[in-house]
Amino acid sequence: MSAHLSTVSFQKVLIANRGEIALRVIRTLKEMGIRSVAVYSEADRNSLHVRMADESVCIGPASSSQSYLNIDAIVTAAKITGADAVHPGYGFLSENADFAAAVAKAGLVFIGPDAASISMLGVKSTARALAVKAGVPVTPGSNGVVGKNYRTVARQIGFPIMIKAALGGGGKGMRACLKEEDLDRMLKTAQAEARANFGDERMYFEKLVLNPRHIEVQVAADNYGNVVAFTERDCSLQRRHQKLVEESPSPFVDGATRKKLQEAACKLILAAHYHGVGTVEFLMAPTREFYFMEVNTRLQVEHPVTEEVCGRDLVKMQIQIAQGQALDLTQKEAAAIHCHAIEHRINAEDSEHNFAPCPGTVEEWIPAGGLGVRVDSHMYSGYTIPSYYDSLIAKLIVTAPDREHLLARSRRCLDEFVIEGVKTTIPFHRKIVNNADFIQGNTDTGLIERMVALEKKQHESER
Image (tube, rainbow, N blue to C red):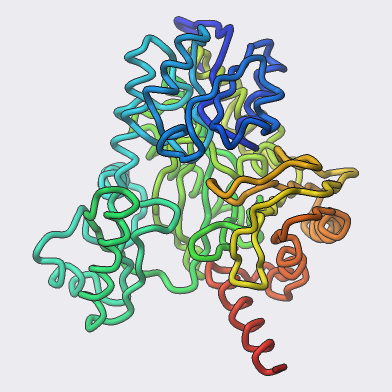
């Protein structure tokens, strides 16, 4: 490892986020002896992250655009409270290059990659071009945004193809096009969705890998050229491109493939001159061939899974890198597997009615506990879940020495977790851990949709 060069020591950090992730960052800051500043909207006045922080500042009304997406308000809050740095969390402004630049311009440290790296890796077509240059496997595709010759490009790739927004995320602006006659309609739909969500309708095409797994590799890189990659996370259990369950290590990835994934992720991060933590995401075919998909230039929702498997605090690592410290672990140490871990995302949604959001007051809150159990949440009895934000209310992270015990512990935890007053996805998670394909490790990104479709069919036949 390289020796430390110029380092700084943060006295106070502002967290430019809300809820569970803000609370998660505050806890690490407390352990590091760093004061924390919470920001909150008027709808979040009673949120636990506001109570737990050393200081708090209201930055606007309930609407995200007037609060958690308001760059000027957040930077002003950081300056008036005397913060040294800003931690963006995930979502909201965490992958916004303009925000990173604004924080730096204000003389503060952005705890994450610089604006140039976010810009380069945040545009999927640019990130793909960099992956090609770095020798990282990519799916056959348009190698950049498509123009008027989109039909010719699609034919060259060969159907089925995936239409993707260049500035996409969260499954928005994406459409699977199975045959050429659907191309015009699918492209227009994807463009309209991308325009509405990202203000940009540029598209690129990729070959559609059928029945793939979604495999991602957590990386950490310091300012001195040191990069490490951790054991992969299997995030194949998704509904409409939104992850429900994440697991590490993947039951499908063998040792040789694991090493190739880690090497590919490190190559790309080095080529991007990236610093901070981040995630390189891949699609994996049933043959175990894998293809670069995208880079998330921030902390992931599912980072606790990796923390449990590697035994390291990734938020602490982020902060240390931002302070100018060199990584204090080798690739061998990063890749060590200390346990098996799984994360269940518990959302305030009614899984029996098309996963409709269910904001409201939590009348009773009794989280699961015991050996190998971690619950990351900002919930408490009497808390009112606002309707303005993401429906994620808790992350149940379970660990065990092997996968068989892991699933048994997950079942036990999901059975004892009590949330009254709002509908949650806990009943659906119970179905997942009892699903035969999941138990056997036979998962792909379509498994949840198949489960939902089968359940719907059974309900209709019972009527």
